[in-house]
Length: 116
Length: 117
Image (tube, rainbow over the protein chains, first blue to last red):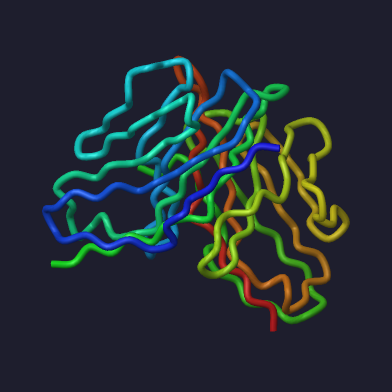
């Protein structure tokens, strides 16, 4: 079974600094996708960044970037120049194609606090 | 803007009644939608996969007779919590995969907070 592990229940960062959130996963599949979702206090799930497993190049989206280590099954999220609006729960998620539907498996989440 | 909507956003009901929650994809068709449950300070737990034109697929441990799912059209899935009890109080979230150039991306509704008195 696929599992996603986020070992940091809580993290904090100073505004304008950089923080890295950790995620590891377990799978026997070779073709899959990894995601980071953000859930602010409104509880709306927002896609932050996505990585296709077949791509060696790490995905980036403005201040957000990932360090994807396929052999180590590691997928960390780096937030640069942290802003107060980045404060939220961050969930790492995994999916792979299965019969036309791609179910997401989520980690337990990391609560990020941004200090002014 | 939002691509998946949910209604209602909040509902309070009495024990024993049934509650229906709607999930709509706004600008794309979704033959599959997903329903999640989230307890306070916890992660999302997949309850079931809603399939347009066929029966929903439930995850292990989820009571299909309690959580009825109907995928009425390519843009609408409903979750009905039947004979609700206080332990069913939770935050329910739906998602729908939006087609992309390479693969689908799951977009989430804003969630429905259910409180059963």
